[in-house]
Image 1: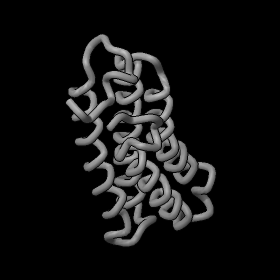
Image 2: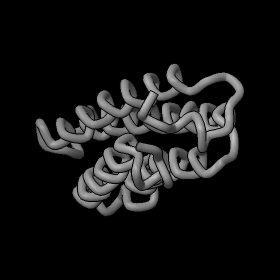
Image 3: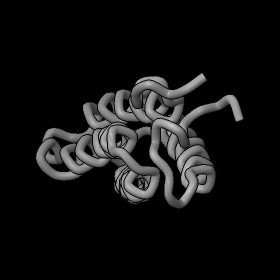
Length: 131
């Protein structure tokens, strides 16, 4: 079975789930943070599936690997921002648990995908699961 589009990637599907969770969390932040921390959270959350999608749409695995690293950077940003929001008392205890669990899962998935992508190969051949 081969991957036809980024929508076929479980890592992209999980990243979309994370983005929706983070959007809900950002909506719980104080109004004063609407253009500050809430905006940063949303931007970083959208960046994760966007980088996965853009990377998969590229022709070579090296480019995809680069975009996966960018997604990993956005996951680190999200982790930091959620921690800050919690430590500032903007969120109830446990409110970030689902997002933090998804961040950890996505980190592992993205790292694994980076390691599995060959150094120099067309993505159409690299993203098959029948080898």
